[in-house]
Image 1 (cartoon, helix red, strand yellow):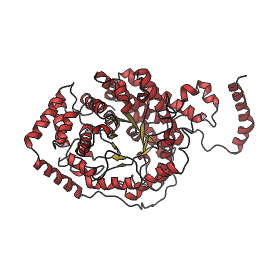
Image 2 (cartoon, one colour; image 1 turned 180 degrees about the vertical axis):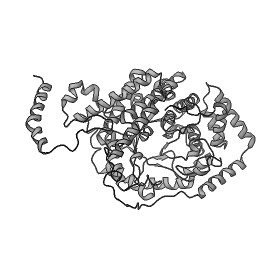
Image 3 (cartoon, one colour; image 1 turned 135 degrees about the horizontal axis):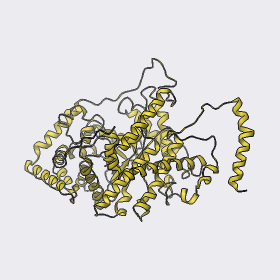
Image 4 (cartoon, rainbow, N blue to C red; image 1 turned 45 degrees about the horizontal axis):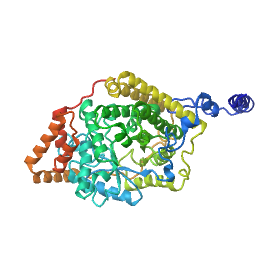
Length: 561
């Protein structure tokens, strides 16, 4: 009799002799236990769930820093280098953001993460009529290189890693960062950081796009190619599943759609026939959400790593192991923050941060407890940094790598999520790739369906949320400090913008913009150097975006539901 047969026999004996008598006296609290993915969870997990379905240690798990990287991309993980504590921040004017960054660094944050306001994200200067009410509201206003100079006053750009959550205007914003660094004598080749530059997820879940898909993909790949040649330490894209999760995606959808996006970017770069896969793939990065179901989230991260390794090795024939490593930033789930009993959010985000670290993240943002009500205050953001520091220095979870690796439930769950995510990728492949799938509305519909089903379960009380549908406090008053953006921010930013325009050489500005437009008209031209020259010449983000709109037009999403 094999070991698996012995376990199966002993399991039946346990169920009859031990379990059934207990269940008669003490029924379980639910008829069925399900993960957020909808997977049925058994009472106990054994080798029958892993080896019994073909799980193999070396091929499925392996060792840290080795293919398929299930246990992590680096051989020593946090024993050698802790994850980067990178709180997403930025609001109001450049002065406000500079003050917040210096505060975060003073309390132990180890990397910066820039938030930009909606006008900046959509290619509008703050004096545009559509920008008026949004200047500095959800991020810092960034119309010109002058604002970037102020944001980084007193901050060593050659020593700090900076992440930028910007997509449709990613080249303009990164060009500002490069221009400021070079003005300080810092070579762009040593700059470290990430620019999101993920336009596909905008079409699917977030909707902050400007141009149609074809020129948008050209824009994104221009940045990837330029960075591969000129900024070897810079992550040229952060392919995001976070926004899918926030819109309602299940764990398998989050990684399935994200990796399908990543496949599309790699294909488009290779189709340009300018660089080979190993020259740029090692600087592709990812961005995922961490929800409160700890074990399922850990399995999700491990599955994503293993899948990406297989995709790069088998589909794209990558040779460099670094091209197969899925390195990712994690943010705790904003959609799970509640305005009711907001201090409970601190418990949620701590558990979510724990899931991210046990799942092997490379950098982490912990949402502040007050973010369902306003931008975070200094007090709340300090606690979010302290959550990460307690995990890092006090919890002991960094002492060994992938401490849950080999656990029967974790390995079974990793396999199940991977299987479901592969089915999503296969379906997208049948459609002709992610752009075709987006045009058909496939990911949008699937995420909308999952969001609806989740909300129905919340409304019925099947998914408990403390303070919302369980342990509700009637007549409760929210008593937390609220951060409000100074309305004078708009005046300050516009005043500085007007001063910059007044001192510029008008004819040089027109010439630089004309060069950007001509480059955009030529499909084989990389537009990054032209935008960089324009930024250095004090051309504004809104002016560059307007010039590109003239060439490429604006995208209006088709009805897909």
